[in-house]
Image 1: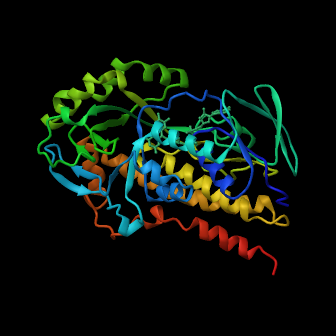
Image 2: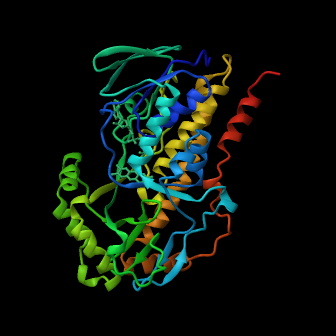
Image 3: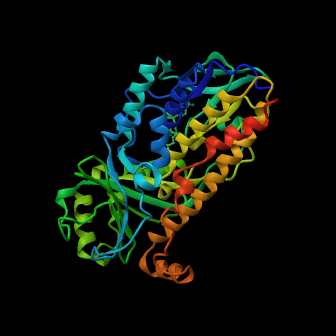
Length: 417
Ligand SMILES: Cc1cc2nc3c(=O)[nH]c(=O)nc-3n(C[C@H](O)[C@H](O)[C@H](O)COP(=O)(O)OP(=O)(O)OC[C@H]3O[C@@H](n4cnc5c(N)ncnc54)[C@H](O)[C@@H]3O)c2cc1C
């Protein structure tokens, strides 16, 4: 039985947890958030791309208008050869096709806007509040420890990220390293010697040693993220952290084989080197497919990175956390007391997992585009060429999900006449 769903506890005030809380609040379901970090903690200093699917959720949450003011908006991400000639495009992401363009902004800017909204909605957020463990779960409630203090809620939603603690009440599975990492940093766009004034910086340059992928981070495009992806042996968490803090090593990794890059890429790498103190590392992990996203009783649920870590090449980490939050709020608010919570959550998990499976295929394709030239040509040869023609709305499944309608149909089919 679904029972009364109110007074829901959310662990983590990242993008997924904040979206979850706002979506529940909109549906008059009371909730509160516990966040381990302090209120003024800063997010990793890079940007996130909100695709039309993520923009649609933000729009529904009443956030897009404000967030969009801080975004660089784009319709295509171009593929370039080593000299900077355009050789292909990502599928266009236009308002006509999908309702929204791609919106990119610094992650901190997104979180700041979400915090303002949480305050406006009067949603309680306790900072410096670490979830420790579940003490008890029954058919109607979950009792858990925050900073050693007992708390109780009707549902506990873990939105506590890649190293989730809540996850262990749902699965013993852990994120697996994919053998890939990227180093990325930021340059002032105008400091690079571009081939022309109109050169589209929202692009990926495919050169001999690999690819440099770039995306403007601010509305006027004056700050540019530049990254490079490569195979890297596995490390334990402490050693990944040590590497992330060693800016000289990160600089050596992104500039590796400098002499083999063409002058355009060298000009970009020169600026990256100057800005080496801002370099960041991202080791790529993914989550094995989970059988469920909730505990056996169904009162503990995981969303976002806690449930489905996906590689950054998909550009979908934040977008999928948003989709999780929105669709879960729609589901929970539609359940009537006689409906089976577990059955509903299993249905929701199936819908969400199908999308993650599709996104993993996109990430794999983009990973191949970032390979060193030799390996990339072998892959392209075996897979029908450099740039295959796709229908104009090929990304409709990703950017215009039907999950909300699917949930509504499921609810209807489970409602007694
Ligand atoms: C280095 C790096 C770079 C990234 N760059 C991009 C990018 O460019 N584009 C993109 O789309 N995605 C990016 N991602 C992925 C993206 O950040 C995630 O997909 C997204 O943030 C997931 O949101 P979330 O709310 O699930 O988790 P998070 O944003 O990780 O939030 C989890 C929150 O839970 C809190 N928390 C954790 N444990 C506890 C606890 N025990 N008690 C209370 N609170 C807790 C954390 O402090 C945090 O605030 C990046 C990830 C990493 C690691």
